[in-house]
Length: 372
Image (cartoon, rainbow, N blue to C red; front, side):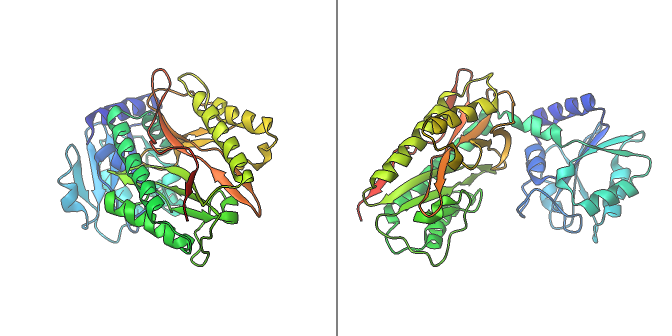
């Protein structure tokens, strides 16, 4: 249990008029208690729970079934509570009523981290209490990272950069997209806790898809561009980067498009400083593309926050006026995408400082041309 985080959460609960908070998002459970679930995703079904936290004035209770109860008892600062199967909304509600102090009236919950059927059931069985959406409490707490968190993210990004160095040495003509992705995945699993998302490896024309599933049959050819987007996990924290490789010497069009993307990415980085709006960073990128007449080929926002989740606030795109503050960690990843030709994206991950930013991504942004 992180006592400082618990204290900040209780302060936020008081401001929101909450007597208690039921925490079901696994990322938030880990953020608060240190407990790491095994299943992926940010929603736990009541029928197969790994661990919930119940925060109230007296303590933080940790609710889990028999698979995790021994480990839960080793967690510092929390009280382990066993849920007997079969676990249902009624089971969870009964345990909550047993644990919550008398007079509890308003309980916060994460409406984006509960199945609809579980949320409805919880409402039905918590007679005399009202449920109030409270997911913003955690998104606000996690928005700015502590120095310790930034260091963990830096280490995740170091592993990610090392994986790029590795694949640059072993990639060869004739490998399939899936083989390249699996080679990266193997490195990330060997040197970290795994992959922060499904690795993207796109050859030539398939690079026109910003998100893409590597094909098991598509083979790498001489002269093709390779788009690689991947990230490591280190102690629960995510890395994320995109780099390009050319199998041989790049042609004139490749160099031209790459140069524009690199110019846009540097413009986005240059716009980062405390006090600006998130959308201002995105606008700096768009102005470069507009100047070159290719804004219509930029198919996504400039970046996203990274932490315990690989996609979390702040969003670096139009329509998001979040004030950039020291401690925020996010990507800057402009790209250009052309059907029947391919795509180019350059992605770094940065941590905002008091005066600007610290680039956590040490891999070169220059186009890597391999001798084949």
